[in-house]
Image (cartoon, rainbow, N blue to C red; front, side):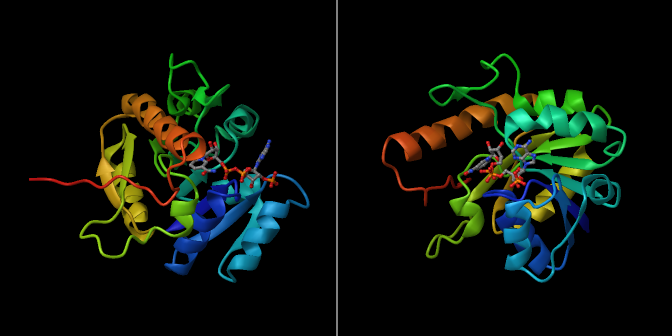
Length: 211
Ligand SMILES: NC(=O)c1ccc[n+]([C@@H]2O[C@H](COP(=O)([O-])OP(=O)(O)OC[C@H]3O[C@@H](n4cnc5c(N)ncnc54)[C@H](OP(=O)(O)O)[C@@H]3O)[C@@H](O)[C@H]2O)c1
């Protein structure tokens, strides 16, 4: 699959490396000249390459958005046309003061992202854990993989993203339409507050047990 990453930092880099090493055609978008994060990601895998952002997005079937939330408006508005019909994987989280919801829980970040790229097929995924789990998703000894809860309104887009979630070492758990994104964002805040404020290990994930 042809995949572009907008954002190649803590989140984007490990996912891009993993998907490239799994055989996908992964391109990193250059959002500015001399980006240290893009250079560092390129150094991690010879299978990655970088292109100007418009070119990277236009040539991709699936676009990962892994940027600071506040950068999304400036990045996405000019790309709205190029993103029409593409799967847009929103890994971003709106975070406000004191690790609160950055949009005051009035609207999810992913619905805001959808409004900036109205014809993209937005799927929220890879958002509920810290980057440490994207670097290393292995939990040896457990009979299930870490659950990756994801949501979106387009079933075909979610099927594609589900496959990518599996390729990254997680169990995809489809939790419904994009209206669920707000709840995933609160789940993220719970994890972040547990780990970054209350001393839990970042090596902590949720598992989906069923009967
Ligand atoms: N960190 C986590 O554990 C974690 C986990 C899940 C989700 N998230 C979410 O994922 C997103 C990315 O987080 P991250 O930790 O990967 O961030 P990060 O390490 O700071 O990386 C941000 C990436 O976005 C790029 N970028 C493009 N336009 C930008 C702009 N205007 N301002 C700043 N950076 C810009 C940066 O490029 P340059 O290097 O060229 O500036 C860099 O590649 C955030 O929305 C975050 O809430 C984070």
